[in-house]
Length: 396
Ligand SMILES: *Cc1c(COP(=O)(O)O)cnc(C)c1O
Image (cartoon, rainbow, N blue to C red; front, side, top):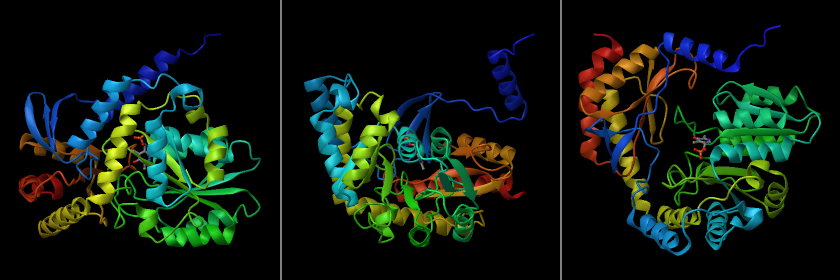
């Protein structure tokens, strides 16, 4: 009996993907200077980072990082519950809890791990639990449900009626209703108030992944949940990341003291993982302070978003219904998306083509992201380049 060879299987799947022209490859950025990226020796104006507030290279973040690194070195050397939990982590957790209006917050090394950890802790040892999710939720929310062994039920994008039907189909089951706050590939905001009302009616627990909303939405940047006027009683489980608008890396979950206590006991991806470098926690704390105080970053960003949407709509480009810094152009075929990204690169712009399986088949797109680090002239340059490549996009 011949046992199938795992490495051989993997190689076959990779070759299949290559034949479908869907192979992915990371390119090494040689230098980053605000939105400008040097790749293959060429300086390109980037519209693909998630550094929405332009904080990743802020001098105060760098100074905080250096101060702690000089003092304490780089690694935290252990998990939080061993001896990796430093003063910098504690201060950051406090600041994040205060910002999001919750009793406590708990750090995770990545947003991916946070979504696994929360669902494992909430659903993992509960018989017959169900997790109802938007079809376009981030991969880590889907994978978290699988890890927890709960039944996954998905509803069409932002369809609250669909979510209601999924919950009603298992009306006796313990249920988590989980959604992205801002959808990462579409840029639209979830119908949070309606989902909160549904969760309350159905006795389900609502969880929001606000990776792309924190820092960007709400007057103080507290994110999509605060922007919808919802608090901890409507959205008891709030997750967000430190690697997007905050320009650092890592993530956290914020909620009641009881939630955080429970996660500390049972969220295995947090318990069994090395704590973030304390210098990074110090940089993230500096980022939180700036994100809360410097309203001009959000104002500048909205101005750039409006400018881009006005220009793109005048050009007849396939904009999506997004008011956030994620401004995708829906192109359909993966080949068109790739060809357009390449044509833009020839004109000195770096914009990523997002192809299946990251997005559904036939919905390949250019995922344009804007940042407070951009200037109006940068947006104009992007629009001028898009005008030149327009024949590739909508046919000559
Ligand atoms: C980026 C992202 C994550 C993962 O966060 P990382 O810290 O990068 O692992 C989770 N959810 C959403 C919606 C994201 O966009």
